[in-house]
Image (cartoon, rainbow, N blue to C red; front, side, top):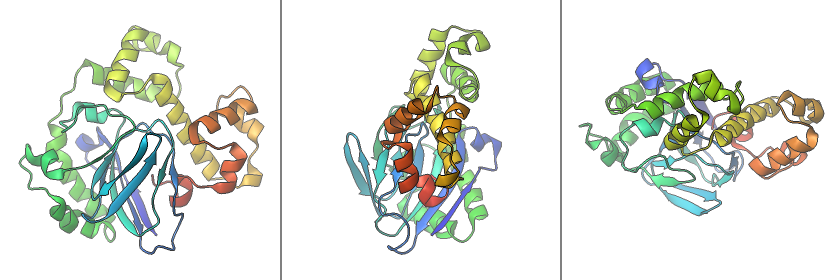
Length: 282
C-alpha cells in the first residue's frame, strides 16, 4: 500500500484546494475490501487510469464507472469497492469551493458521483488535457515523486482556478467556515454583524448544506481522528462524550449511529472506515 497527502504550495491554489492525496493498492490481498467513507462536506476530483473501474454504494443506489470522476459532498456514510488493485490521485477542494469555479455541472451537488470529462472541464482554459495526458504526466510520477506531482498539479490547476467568480455569498461562507468549530451557530450572526437568516441562505447556496450539517461533519472528522489514534481499551466513552460537546454517553451513541451506522463499540471493533484502513488519507 502506498499513500501520501500534501497541501498545495501556491497560495492561489490553496484558496480553493485543501490537499492532494494518493492511494495505491498494488495487490488484491492488501487492506480492507469494502471500506466505508464517513459523511464529508468537501468535493474530490479523483484522477485515475482510463480503464480503472470505480464503484460507490450510496443510499440512493450504486454509482459506478471508469477512470477519473467527481466525488461530491455526502451526507451519509457510503461504501467503497476496493477489492481490486487501484491507483487514485485525489484533489480535495475546500468546502464550497466549486461554487466559485467554472464547472460543467451546476453547483452545489450533494450525494452524487459523476464521471469527470477532463477535456470538457479544462477546454475553455485552452489546456490540452485528456485522460491519456493525465496517465502520462500526472499519474506516472505520483507514486515515485510526491513533491514533483504536487508541483505539476499546482501548475495544472492554476489557469482554471484563476477563472473564478467570487460573490457576496462565497465571501460570507468563507468567513463562516473557520468559525463553525468554535462559535455556536446561533451566535454567528452576532459575530459577523449580519442576520442569521442571511448566513443560512448564503451558506446553503454555496455548499448545498445547512450550517448544522457541516458542523456535524466537522465534529465527526475530529472525533474519528481522535479514535483512530487510540486502542479500544484506552477509550473512556463518558469522558469522550463531554470532551466533544455531547450531553452524555447515550447522546454520543445516537450521534455515531446516525452518522456512520454503528455504535461506538461496534465501530472500534470493526475499524472499517477509510481513516482506519488508509491511515487518515481520505
